[in-house]
Amino acid sequence: MRKLAVYRNNILAGTLTEQYRGSYVFEYDTQYFNNTKKPAISLTMSKTNREYHSDTLFPFFYNMLSEGVNRKLQNKLLKIDEDDFFGLLAATAQFDTIGAITVKPLDL
Image (cartoon, rainbow, N blue to C red; front, side):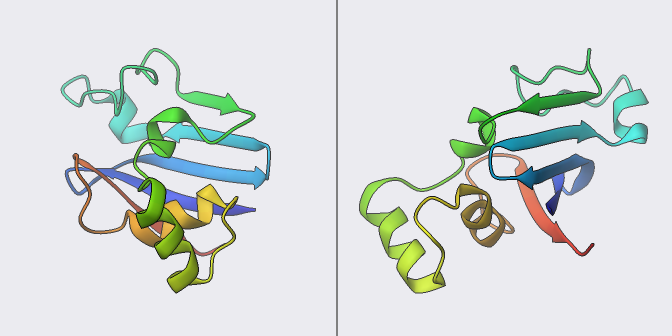
C-alpha cells in the first residue's frame, strides 16, 4: 500500500491511497471537507462524498502526469516502471505542478 498527501495551495486536502494496483481511494481530510469555504479538488471529486474509489488512477491525478517523450524520460531517469502511474505521480508532482494540487508521499 502506498499513500500520498494531497495538497491544494499548500493546504492538506486529503489522501490518495493505492491499496494495490487496480484499487485506488481518495479521501478528503476531515477539516478540509467540513470547511465550506474550501473548494473540491476537482469537478469529478466534489465535496458531496468524503471518499472516492476507483479501479484505475483517478483521471484527475493521471492528467497531472507528463505525456509522450517527457514521461518516458522521467520513467527512465527515475527508474520507475512505465505502468506505475502512482509512483510517477509521487515522484513528479511534489513541487511545481501546473495547477493548485501537489502531492507528498506519506510514510506508513
